[in-house]
Structure formats: C-alpha cells, structure tokens
Image 1 (tube, rainbow, N blue to C red):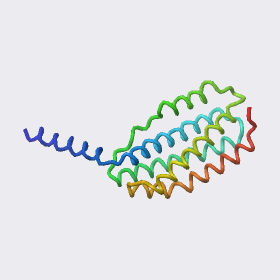
Image 2 (cartoon, helix red, strand yellow):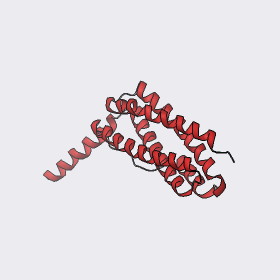
Image 3 (cartoon, rainbow, N blue to C red):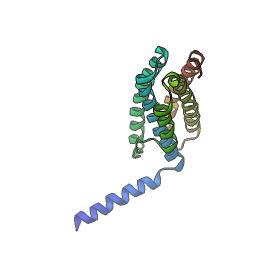
Image 4 (spheres, rainbow, N blue to C red):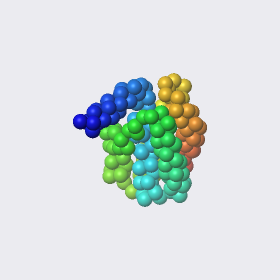
Length: 168
C-alpha cells in the first residue's frame, strides 16, 4: 500500500514537472538535441569519407566542440530540473543524414557535407539567438547565451570552408 502511494507521488511529480516546462523551452531543448546530434553524426561521417584535409579538420573540431556542448546542455537541463530529450534525429535530420551517408557519391561528399553544415549552423545560430533573447528558463537561456559565440564561430568556419571546397 505504501509502495503504491509512493509510486503515485513519483508519477504525479514527474508528470507535473513535464507539464511545468514551457513549450518554448521544450521546443528549444528538442531542437538543440537534434541539432547537436546531427552535427556530431555528420562530422563522424566526414572523418570517414571526406577527401579534403580542411573538411576533416573542421569535422574533428565539430565532434569535439559539439560533444562539449552536449555535456553542457545536459548540465543546464539538470540545473533546470528538466529531463533530457531523447537523443535521436528527427525525421528531417535522419533523411539528411541518410542522403549524406548513402546517396552522396565519393567525389561529392565534401561539398554535400559542407552544404549540410552550413544549413545546420545557420539554423542553430538562429535557434540559439532567439532562445538567448527570449527563453523563459534561466538555466537554458544562460546555456544558449554561452553557446551562441561558439556556434557563430562554427558558422564563420563553415562559410570560409564553403569557399575552399568546390561545389559539385
């Protein structure tokens, strides 16, 4: 009887916790999780398939930086007492990953990867900039503010890389 009551309290409190998360925060957490996983996963592909040393160097930095971003993000979520979203790509990003992995020819991988990174970092910068300005959850707003300069630097790096890697 006591166990059942305790279980109900735990379930009720976790349900209340999820219900207390503002929708803007949930959306940000979901987008940040997917974006970070996509950056890491596609960069790991580049470490296997890229021909250009510049692309491989960029990919190594993306993996290292985004693993740290992921760790910092989990710490911010814990500080805000919010459960971390499932670390899986959404349908759109899974399709982009599959296209890059399966349908990109050996000679066009570098260009396709750079294009995906450019789009991904443009989206990430916009998402983080918006949440840093308007986010309702202090721990995640602080995380977005602290992470934004890194993402802006990544965007500049990939814009510079786009100039070096021939389009196919």
